Length: 203
Image (tube, rainbow, N blue to C red):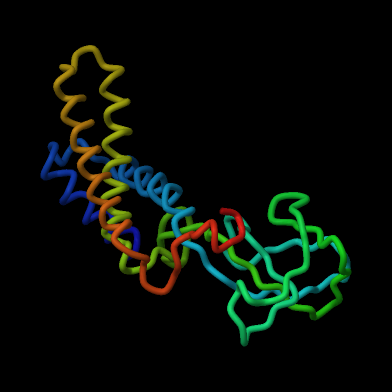
C-alpha cells in the first residue's frame, strides 16, 4: 500500500467511528508515522555485510537499518546461524561493534540480524513501502489508533467539548489497537521473521 491508499483506508475506518471531517490528512499521516515506529521492532531481517575497511571495529549498516541486534563472524551460509562459528564481539556505538580476538580484513563477510526502518511510499519522501503485505491492515489499524490518540489530546484541551467525546475516542483507539495486535501476534509477516531474543543470543 502507498500513502494515498493508507489515507483512504484510514478515512473509511475513522469516519465510521467519528465524523469524517474530524480526520485531516495531517492527523492521518502522523498516525501512520506513529504506527510505523511501533512496528519497527517487531520483525528481524538478515543481511550479509562486506568489510570495506580492515580493523577490529566495524560499522554495521545494512540498507534501511534501524537497530543491529546481533552479528556473526565468520559467516558460513551452508549452516544455520546457531551452528556457525562465532567470534566474540561487543557493541561500541550505535550499530558499531568491536571484535575482541580477530582483526577483520577487506572483503570479509559479516552476517547481521537487524530491525529495519519501516516506510510507506509517499510518506516523508519515501519511494518504497517496506511494510510486509501481510501486515498492512494491522499497520493501518495501528495508525487509526494513533490518530485517535492525537485527536483525543486535541479535544481534551478544549473545555467546550464534552468529556464523552474523548471517552469515545479512547475506546475506539483501544479497540483498533487490540485488533491490530491480534493480527500481528497470529504469526510472522510473510518474508520476514519475528524477533526471537533467545535465537539472537540475547535471551
